[in-house]
Image (cartoon, rainbow, N blue to C red; front, side, top):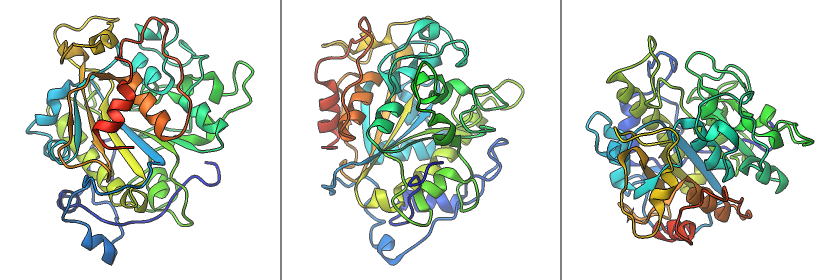
Length: 373
């Protein structure tokens, strides 16, 4: 990874986080086995634990955005009894109750979330970067051009910027390998995917523990401006035949969130108020699903909730966000992208000309509803 990548620290744990960490979380990521992460403790953290991760008390500008993407569940997942940590997080922080994905299946949603467009058959089919390279500008390249850093942290990925599925690692869930502008293709000299799209690592100190080091490494000032955290298919609710499936997926996913959200909200950047964490889903689930599907059209003015297959949850976690904040405004992944660009001081990447169904100003409403600006 490039110099200036990882940021240190450790400050306040929430009560929910403390209980979660006592329960224990992940060492054997591929199998779903879990072990307690090493979270540093300090006197000040103890004074900040009782109020929860979302207090609405911070006025610091957001300069770091972290997005965790889960798979294939509609908004009602936040009420699921078998995911108690997720349920507690949604109750304690912000929730967009009328959020939507873009299409089905997965690939187009990940690409649209970080570029505002989906080119070619990636809109309607899953496939790897070799099948569906993307020539539009990406958020990753925007950040590079601004002289800042980004990171994709992918669980179970064998090598940086790996373009091929491997075991429980699915490349389509990582987005970065698809874009010419960060892979040195199509005339671009930017090949930052090779240094910035890296394996997740374990939730404790050690060589190659990349996200943990970004949050807690020595030296300071190293958390990227934008981070995409990608659980593998045994921890993101997707599953894999013969490897991980059934009700155990909910336990695995909940424990993954318990671990990493706990580490994020205990980090000094989060406690300084300058970090936003979004937990979202690539797409919803429902018997009404078709492929492709114009889920973006569900976010037109005056529509509510919409089809279950297009309806997802966006959980907003920040020190600026009041506890239990709710927004019923219709959003989709393009609005979330524009909200991120606003926070990071970037220009808006254009949406697909025929796929821009969100109400005008939805990104600014997202920011104001959760007091992010």
